[in-house]
Length: 265
Image 1 (spheres, rainbow, N blue to C red):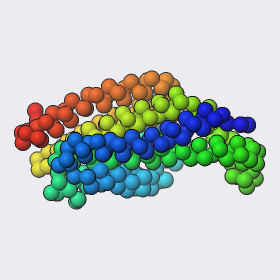
Image 2 (image 1 turned 30 degrees about the horizontal axis):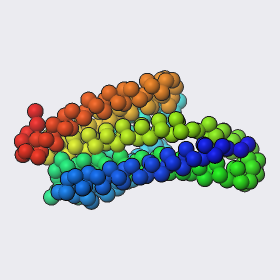
Image 3 (image 1 turned 45 degrees about the vertical axis):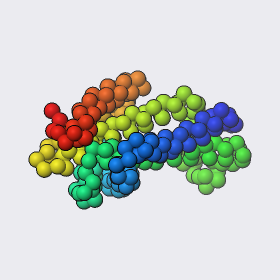
Image 4 (image 1 turned 60 degrees about the vertical axis):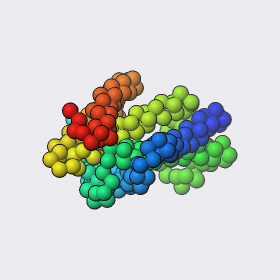
């Protein structure tokens, strides 16, 4: 097998864009809103790292074997876990580290950091890793690469071959779709960060469970696609766009009201 140069180029360019776009978004927003607190973005990234990539994954090791045999339980758990961990993580960050910096614009920065780091970790690292695998396969040949990667384990070798087949099918269209999905997710994270920012204020605690449920609702279509309940990619992305646009409206109102020192209706 020889993986095409077009595939490798798509993987490399897509991986780099998944890293560059979030950083550029943070820089542009900081230049536009000079009063925004730059460490908010780092706190957002740290929140995703600790609550999603560490704590949530630890719970998955316990819960996934329990729910994996039941599609309904798997979907419910998969949707709620991300919402609970990520939105609670945001709330903790606001309460513990941003007592003197809780503003809507800093919430936007936190959302960009959170969603941006997610894009880097899940898409950027994955695409660049796949590009490295593709280059390695072309350099030594498929059989040699699989033998070296699996140390002769036949069951693992089959899984690696399937993974390489999937990599070989990648193109600019598939990579662009992944980037589009991450842009929607970043926008949604910004909205959730602003909503949870308001929940961290006295008397608005009920906005936290609302953010958790909204996050779970957004993730529901992706989880159902993962288990085969939904089979169309459009059936995943269209609801994501619609839900993100819907939550963007109250988010915009909160930001405007925050600038004016008012309470959004």
